[in-house]
Amino acid sequence: MAEAKRERFGSRLGFILISAGCAIGLGNVWRFPYITGEYGGAAFVLMYLVFLVILGLPVMVMEFAVGRASQKSAAAAFDTLQPSRKWHWFSWWGYIGCMVLMMFYTTVGGWMLSFVVKMATGAFNGLDSAGVGEVFNAMLANPTELVGWMLVVIVLGFLVCSLGLQKGVERVTKVMMVCLLGIMVVLVARAVTLPGGLAGLEFYLVPDFGRLFAGATPAEQWATFGDAVFAAMGQAFFTLSLGISAMEIFGSYIGKERSLTGEALRICGLDTAVALMAGLIIFPACFAFAVEPGSGPGLVFVTLPSVFGQMPMGQLWGALFFVFMSFAALSTIIAVFENLISWSMDKWGWSRHTAVARTAVIVCVLSLPCALGFNVLAGVQIPAIGDIQSIEDFIVSNNLLPLGSLFYVLFCVSRGGWGWDNFLAEADTGKGIRFPRWSKLWLKFGIPALILVIFVMGYVPKFAVWLGMA
Image: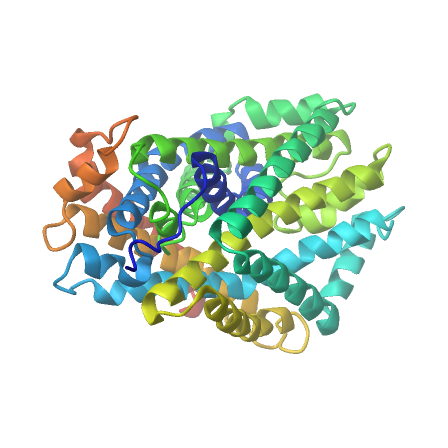
């Protein structure tokens, strides 16, 4: 009876756009551009694309395969595919990962909505970067404003999910994604035609591998390259939200008409296209107005509003940019909320409305520390990591994503898990591109090795500080 009631996507396009919407988020339009600027532009982009194919794509196929084969969320998928219950503990990994992700993502999503209003009402008119920074810092210092926008994001997300998979999540996300792509095209056209923007395009699109080896001595040059490699590998995980079963659930909502490798390629392609288009907006604008493109996380919230302020009709372009940013954030938030809701329904047998109501309360409560971490709880810090938002981001990005991806790989290739033959059969079911059978050794040894490198390298600078070595 439970199988017959399993919700389904109404269309293949819905599956692709919602899965892409989950992947397309702040990792694409906030993190990717400033990391690219920090590590020299096009050369870094090429390296990132390589890791996306050899690391991100296979893990995405694995998550989809686990979901489609089990027809369950992560709450029950591993027991269904491996009845020995050796992997039973891993069912909680996705729930915890998605929950911690939302604990800070809802606050940052609130920033985006706030900036739509601020930009549209002219709050940044006539301000330079320092002036915009003061507005941004004033917002962070105001707990009522931060919590208010956080709650708006949570209410919007759960309201969409309460309408159901097809009528809510699929229908709304499809509209948002189409609007997101349309707004991006308009913004790209505006940015690349700015006087002086050509230098930004050259920086972004013409590889200069010497930038990957910046430094006065060979030791410094290789250290820079190592940092860039680590950043590229980490971004390949962060941008696709892999390792916390965020993609697994969508595999459980689709049929077997198409092979999973082909679908994953389309989703990765759409995700990458948005990240690259974000760069086509940001870098020409930065170079046109002599702004440093590697200015860190403040690039979006401090630097760009002042850049838009210098453009003709900049208030309109800036408002459109933050609408696009808000759609990118909300598409991820809605998709992850759907993960949490479906997990709760499978785990405890709740109805959708019960799962929505209870999960919404939990998310609201757990999101408060991040929103208050910039003001009331600003004193809560961990050396070498930072404030509450940074701590939660570190837990997800440096721990749950890479280790969760490692567990998915081991589950799909090892005899003690689901096994290579079972995974391959599910991945190749349907029309389309087949998963490369010859890649078994790479999946069994290569990917785990790189994931462990990502995990360890994420801790090296932290340990250096903790041990008093830096």
